[in-house]
Length: 386
Image (cartoon, rainbow, N blue to C red; front, side, top):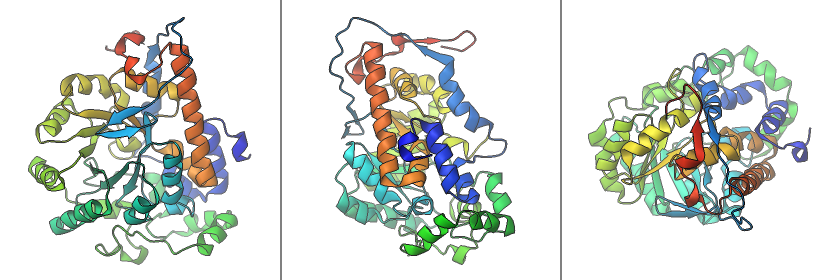
């Protein structure tokens, strides 16, 4: 299978699986516990149907949106994700370049593998810095100040990861950052030598947002240990309110699932929230993001911008979310598998396919602007609350 043979998310996933050692593939693909929330994330979009209109004159379609003050040419953005240079040596450089080509937003993670300063200098499209709340409050302030000095537009605090999710696929292989694999995990790398050669031929793996501040144990710290031992489960609304004031710009909470939490975020001055269950990687058994969207939009009103991620793999998914009031939709695995499969050309192909789907689906819906999408063009199936 070649990149040009990839036409949808499943194709990219298959190509990535062929090229990646299974511990790395499973890190991207896996989720918590029995992975029921992961499965529900995608399935939830099938419970709502689109009602198209015809004869509306849809020659030209405008996909642009404004979210948290940022103008995007597409209503989708590349969600910040960790460890991207493990998937492909270009890592966040490929993601940033592809997002810039399509005029949309991308994010850099605290666990990112390219510095936010480098990415901010290279690409002028809106950039989010996604960070975790550490027990060291001074570190949190230093990370925010660094992002401000780099010129990052939006601060995004992940609030659903105060402890690590139970990701059993990673436990089976001994996956850690950097590598400290068990025998089972190492054997899988032997089966994919091309990935290994590519990895050692390029710059040394690093976590530039954290390397100066956090000791990752020379490979003995697992992903779960990082979340559990270094992040602060005592984080509360007062802590976040202080950070919102300190940042002084668009501040977003990622991982909100309850309507009352969305309202509280607006009250302390957040510009936006991302409805997210971390792609099913944290609390298994939680509701899907899309299932919670309508309730949260109705509770939050116009007080902040509501975004959504988790389970989005089709343009029709995006249109359904926008119709229920989401201002933009985050993509995660949707671009990570193409990144792993082919680097920047892979991410560009994935975003190009999404753009094509969105234009085609908007025309089929009889809509020329994102603002024309409303819940009136949706119908909830029998047994699903509206």
